[in-house]
Image: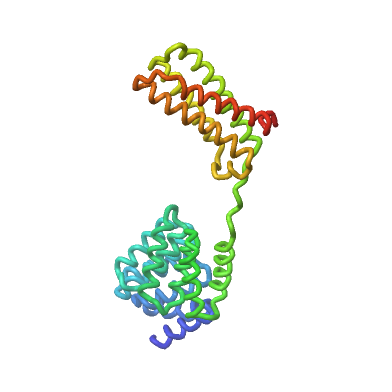
Length: 312
């Protein structure tokens, strides 16, 4: 029996799972309580893509005395092939629970969690633990690379694939995935672009608010402003802030000289108006800051008109 099991394992490993199945079926028929034989049969069925038969064989092994975690791993892989991903994750976790020191359980858990919604983080942790338990196994690093790739952790993915290739130089999949990681890691993000039409329109709106609102505040504040005027100017500042949010990305606003000057003047107008509003609430009666704010808005508005405020 030992010789037959070893021969079946060799056939499966060499890419001849059909011959392994033909060899194992008579064995399990004659020895139905041999757990390892059922596991070998389940593994051969998996290699053939026969997930239903693999699951049946794994279930037969589960109820027998044998290796505690192997049937659970096989069942998890079979369930995953059948699209029953949640059940596959349950079986894989049970495999890890039964034999927490076996790196193969963590590899299978990481593999099946790849198809489970919100399972990426747990898959990464499982794969990382597998690579720590088995630092000489290429498969552990392959799965770690795959998990890191899904999470866009390019550094970990590259390290994992390089480790897998070092342990198994014939690993074509890891070489291809390493090339993908390097390509994505070196790809530069698309440069931010400034929508000039939208920017000039927003600046025009902003200038109209500051010029028109400032003029109304000047008229209403004559000859002596009262704290009640602060409610109007505060609302005006809030409206300017809402319009200003449409100017993003802000760091590109200073890429053009005329645009930078215009933005600076309007920003200064709004800031002075904000400061005067706060001072007004505390009893200030001077009108000079409001006049300064209005003059900045007028000059900024003129630049908006000249620079592109009328463009569509």
